[in-house]
Image 1 (cartoon, rainbow, N blue to C red):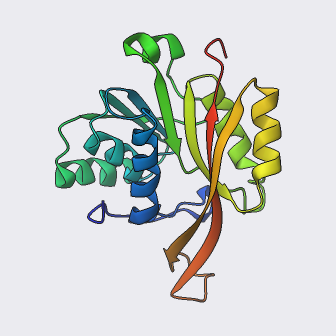
Image 2 (image 1 turned 180 degrees about the vertical axis):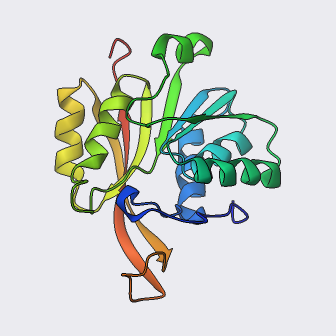
Length: 205
């Protein structure tokens, strides 16, 4: 996972930053232990340069779909796929991750669907509550999801999931150690407190 390259030209408005390899590996490992990766269809919404999608491919997912709007990021993701050399091919889709051209019935034809994602936190002006749209999309696609959110999001995530018929079954804290990415950042690296949530969604969602 450490060989997965990040963004060549990240866009601040999209809150693009690479998910740290250690965090991604831990989340994918936990998902796999719960039966959510090996032999499953795994979807990575807002896939960026492919960290979660490739992690799932390396863990033996039956099918992996990575959805990303940024064509440049998808180019890096494809290069990362060649570099990683996973046996499972990743289907890269260039599209808005909150309106992906995916149908749950087709995704689920081979069995339950797992979504693993690190959506924008909504920290940028004009992009508030961006993670809400990602959760809404996942509720209609997946049987279970793992998603990374800003620390302090548990009340919101639990309430949103409940409104969609879902249930937060697990939550744990994570620290995202991020290298300096944008000009407005002053430190060479910083730790961002985050939370990861596992949500089970109704099959008729």
